[in-house]
View 1 (cartoon, protein in one colour):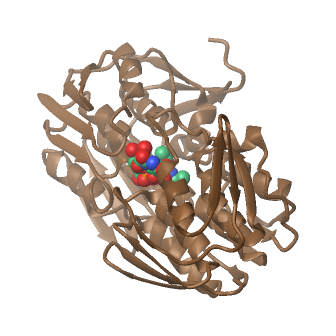
View 2: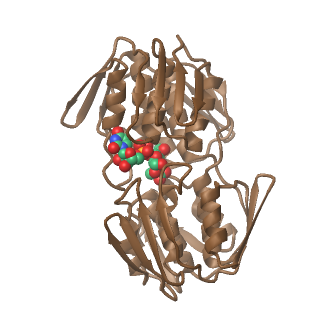
View 3: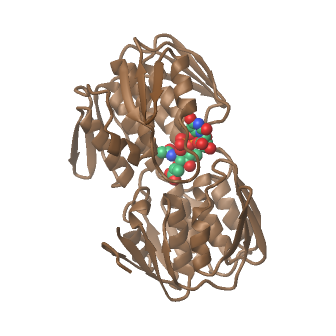
Length: 420
Ligand code: EPZ
């Protein structure tokens, strides 16, 4: 596995181009397979996770063409409902393909999904929703076998606004017979991006608050589509600059909760201004004041920024409390942050972060995508040399993060097949 070698202490200056949202592209690839038509994405970033999903689509018979930085997917010849075990287990989002493939082919067989180790990743809500739409689903140990002679509309009430379940059902419901309602649905920007995409493909989806109304259609068409930008990547660069100091322009404004934390807790050491779809941050790199943060489904503070905020608060003044109500065990990076000198205790789904004056470079290991991003931020701040191992986990959701950071002045480089 590769590692990022980082020499901390450099401020960041310049501008950074944020890629299209990984968590949009993954359901969009799944929805493309459901259309049975051709979809063009004029520009397509190179995330490991999207590459895996494209390979799964090709395995099923879709034709994927990469040209001039874009991707064209023709899923008219997608005909295999049995998903490839190894690829499917690599990415949690592969489960998002289930509904569309089942609706199109009447059969889908997949292993239990994998993804980041950020706590229990059950798929019960996915399967229960598809059963409500008429699917016959059997789990035998490692495999899920789904059959359906056409899906029918249903009224799905989610116990939790699950992003993936909302997306899976939305795709399947577009091809179901009759109307489907999803209540207590997730409303993350990426979910709304998928809704817009499906409507471009002939879908009939309307939303009111957390309720989605989906009219089934016989067939979806193709389209040309440009997704939204990645608010989590933008937030990650915003926090990196707030942490180490500097002046950076970012061509994507993350939502209010991500920005207000920096503006509020930055002790006037951070000035933020938004203009024309860009956000400009000027930061001294001095310690933040301590605070309490709890993640929750959109429009709450996003769980995908939790590791990055813990890294930032590890050198704040005083004691902060960070809790994650979405993934209560998503604190794998804490043990690694402690290698850098952070003082953090994790108890009942909360991280108690006692700010320290400085962090010291060390060899640390990414255990998941966003935890790895948090470690990169901490190493940019730490005195001396660090190495963040398992860089490929970070590549899952950041395209060439080391190039973007070094273009801003960070001392970071990739060491292939790192041996320490
Ligand atoms: C999506 O994962 C994102 N992934 C995650 O981003 C993100 O953290 C998460 O939503 C929450 O915003 C993609 O979009 C590809 P959920 P998803 O279903 O859909 C429980 C990243 O770093 N649940 O909203 O898997 C689940 O255990 C990734 O980019 C069930 O209990 O998240 C969790 O506690 C990480 N049963 C909660 O719901 C189910 O069948 C939230 O999960 C499904 C989910």
